[in-house]
Picture (cartoon, one colour):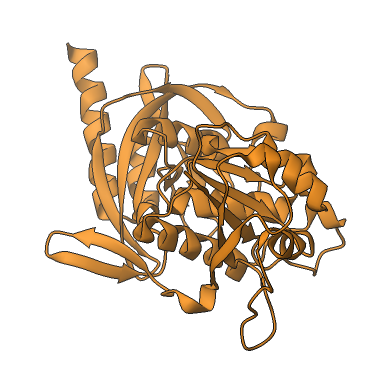
Amino acid sequence: MSKTLLLLRHGKSDWSGNLNDFDRPLKKRGKLAAQRMGEFMRLQGIEPDYIVSSPAERAKTSALKLTKAMGKTAAHVRYEMKLYDAKIKDFLAVLANCPEDKQRILLISHNPGLEELIKFLHDGPVPLPNDGKLLPTTTLAILDLPDDLQRLIKASGQLQSLTRPSQIPDYFTYQIATGVEHRIRPAYYYSQSGALPFRIENGEMQLLLITSSANRHWIIPKGIIEPGMTAYESAANEAREEAGVKGIISHQVLGCYHYEKWNASCTVQVFPMQVTEFVDDSDWEETHRQRQWVTYKQALEMIKIPKLVTIIELLHDKFQQSLNG
């Protein structure tokens, strides 16, 4: 039995900042290309069962974007320093250390090392595309290898295919009742959850509102339900990141509302969360946002999404019932 080796060069990186090479981030198009390649791999049925990435920022982000688009979680990615600035011997050492029961292995790394590895493993001259470039950013190479990865030698494999982002659709599939839609972001982006943070002060309910990322209006902390997380776990995570608070979050959804983003409708499940503490500023990721405790009536005036207003009214009704219960 042979093994399949998937090699992915990281996405297009951003050279604009004054950062060292290891910390250089991806451009927006680099992130999208990694997501599209993950979608392509899922639809083609070539998802890896073992993923190892360079820990450099541009490779790490590529790995996470691609993995989530395949429906996997961040826990599926392992990081190996040998894959940063890797030489042939480094790649071979990483492959030799892969579990024997894994049949389809993905390495995410950098050039020129990846191209050197392909030329080393392929039996014969490596066929180049018409432009003479073997592995542009976010290109996926697939090779067949012998079953024993601890004994790889020169010309022991066969390059089966090269796939560039330009060769795959620039949209993502989204399943609806009547079929499939094409959207500009991965399907999981459109399923979101939010926390409705509250506290009780002098027998009255107060709510914690935050400003949107552009500070244009007041909202609640919300975001994409991360693969591998429940909706309420993701809501609690958003409360910590966007509002800088922790608390007791209900596992029961209070209600849902919709809003338009990425050329389609996003559905947000809302979970009430009784705030117990503010995190340190060092742990509050989005300190650019404003946050404010407001009364129930103030919240109704400040929130401009009608369905979210209804959800706030429902929470207040439940609170009043508990007082009278």
